[in-house]
Image (cartoon, rainbow, N blue to C red; front, side, top):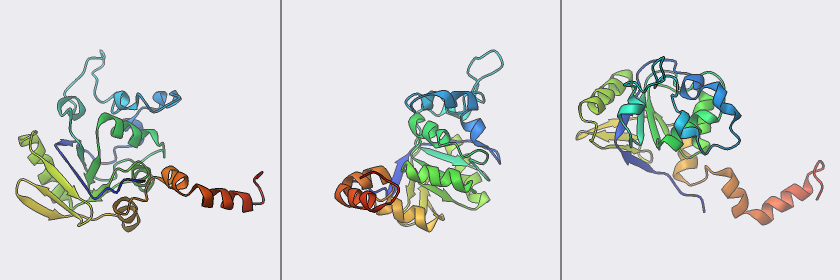
Length: 197
């Protein structure tokens, strides 16, 4: 059974800046990993370190335990690597609020059960300021009703309709869905002219 994702709650982590690409989220040299198990350690690996390798004041060093990432415009642009949302998920991110997202990044997040919702730039800035002023305060992404709640404030957000439906209806994990419908999957595979049945 695929888990429906209607809401995400938790503390936030603000990462400011437009056009943060997937190479910044997880540097290319870590794509050689055979599994995604350690990807959380590589999230923003270079940005989180000074030249001498010591950890700096990057938000991913300062807001540990956060579940809601708050970003600006065109987040996740660049290469289509699945490793970027894998790294965020394994670091602990379960939902993202941003001004906008690269389409492939957004789709890769959906495939992992991470909702990505968009808000006006002023709203994102307000939310980032809120997180910075009160890092222990909770944020709620209410995907089903397309709203974000923080600091007794409720703001409307937008979710891609297909993403929203697949997460809210619990249809986002295609592998689990195939296992759930194994007989139909086998029938379909057997009917295809290019498979050995």
